[in-house]
Amino acid sequence: MPKTLQSKRTLNIVIMKQKINKFFTPRFLNLVCILTMVLGMMTTTSNAQYCSAYATTNGCDNTTESISNVTFGTINNNSTCDGGNQYQDFTGISTDVIRGQSYDISVTAPYYFGTDDDFGVWIDFDHNGVFDDYEKLVLTSAETATGNILIPNWALTGNTTMRIRMTYTPINPLDPCGEALFGEVEDYSVNITLASTPNITNFSPNNGCGGSTPVVITGSNFTGTTSVTFGGTEAQSFTVDNDGQITAVPASGTTGAIGVTTPTGNGFSAGAFTINAPGAWLGISNDWFDPANWCGGVIPTSSVDVIIASGTPFQPLINGAGAVCNHITISGSASLEVATSNVFTVYGNWINNGTFTANSSTVVFNGTSTISGTTTNYFFHINIYGTLTGPASGAIYCAGDWLNNGTWNHNNCTTNFNGTTTISGTTINYFYHITIIGIFTGPASGNIYVGGNWVNNGTWNHNNGAVNFNGSTVISGSTINYFYHIYIIGSLTGPSSGNMYCGRDWVNNGT
Image (tube, rainbow, N blue to C red; front, side):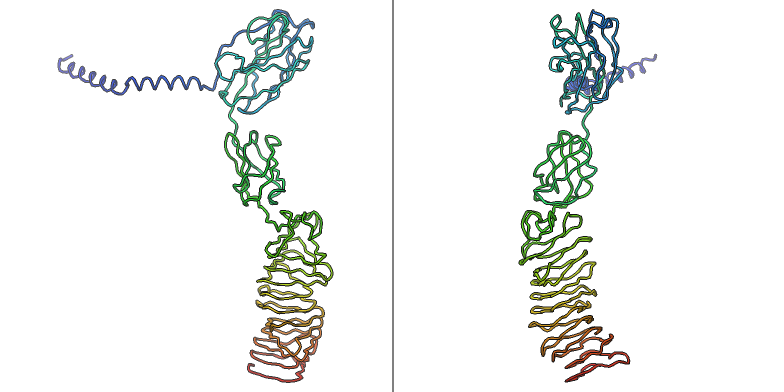
């Protein structure tokens, strides 16, 4: 090799050594050593060579101890006597166990000679190749010995070995290794895994009262649960029924998802649990005035919103004086009945998607109320002391008297008078459409306004009052109308080829 090339190669080698020495410092090499040791300790597979264990007396002669069955996890192994050194290697049979959970174990001995026969189980939890005393469980001594093994949270994950030994302890101690005169030894494999995070698949019911409604939560990986929440608020109480079910009682908290916390993590429901307000109807009986029928155990007051849901054992009946609420919602397929001539006072909105039975009762609207919902309401007496707004372009029925000492906003709805009705009160009523099916008597020497159509298929008693037509009105129906005063402010069209009577003044400032 030429001298110049050899010198150049020597220089490159020197530079490379300097770089290597600079990178692989003593500190770096120590770190590599430590990491190698840690990784070795955390290995998930035990390849240890365990101590030998055996018995010298043949258990096949039906006169000495042997093991015929081991049941643990998914292991359910029947075995016959060894016929040799009373050791059998079943490490090809394995079960998965979860760290932090407990498992029952049973070992059956067909030739059991009393409580001097002892049974021991060792699982090499730390994968160190030794069956240590802290890894030992002594089973109850019986023909089928039993026990419960807790997989400790410090156990290393992965495959390891479980040793089971039966021995006659007056002669030999119950040790995992060595020779014994009587008994048998069997080894199995155990795969230790981490617990999965909790998984909520369902819960029932989907709503309830804080402090009283038990909620059944189903799913998986609930063992070891430390916390259950509803909408982020801790449950009042909970019980882990099994790994797949929890029964919890929500506190008076926030509507939202249900959460379950275990040492392995958190799980949340896909849907929300609704915490019902104190005005939610439970329906233990049908009595409105029984506190047990309401969330929170309190009969509604004028500030409480009432929600009547379907599916309760009973629907509410108001059969007495003093029933009040703020807003009321009658849910689909739910119902509310007011018995006989009782009074029900509402301070807020009236939402009816179910059934309302008025009988001969009075509904008093004493706040700011709007009538809405998918169901047409059939009232008997209506008393207005606040502001009542009718259903938008809908209809209501009134079979009794109409008393207005507040404000009525017709909201383009049709008011049907289908009983015996008298209009009274200190406030003039502005109706939109009016349909008379029964007997309708106007306010004594007073006024009503009609902004829409007037349909009379019953009886109209003017009571010496005035009807003001202030919109676009067509008079129709099967009955001839006898008016007293008529004031036309908008457009009034008479009955087609029919008749109507005006007993007093006719004032036309419209059409």
